[in-house]
Image 1 (cartoon, rainbow, N blue to C red):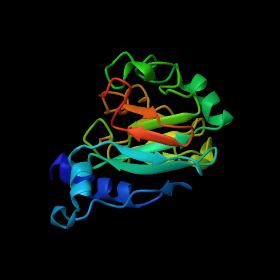
Image 2: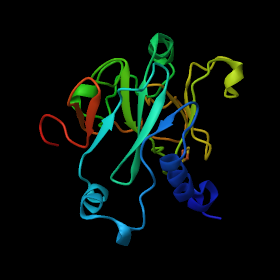
Image 3: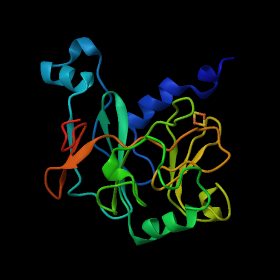
Image 4: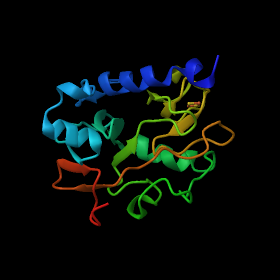
Length: 198
Ligand code: FES
């Protein structure tokens, strides 16, 4: 059986786009069959930016929007979540985001424009499965007794912290991708375009 078959990546990606996880709020539906798309939907599927409304996203919650056929997670990190990033710094493979997995404005300790708002592509950088959210800390998470909160990829066990930084010694080679994005207002984020028009 191939690695792709083992992890059933396509199915997981679809699930990520359609299902809420761990108290998440799902905003976007799965991409319909291409032939049934309106012209604006076709443009979106081809790569047009999408607007995410985070106005109702409460601290500790995650929502998913779809951009270029990929799930993009937006998390409003609360204080506990932000504090967890200091704990994981010595445990992750690329704590300073040296690898080119994010725009320059997200190359910082929180990998984000605003510390509390994390925007990242929810696709594992190993073979493309969609990791599951594991926001509960400690043994209750089912990950490990000292788990600080983050994501677990069920396919081959890669783990990521709440900034999408991959833990050391895992199959995933890099942190999760941060897409280009910018704020249109406090509540609206444009995904797929930043101030440089990327
Ligand atoms: S796809 Fe292999 S660990 Fe995520």
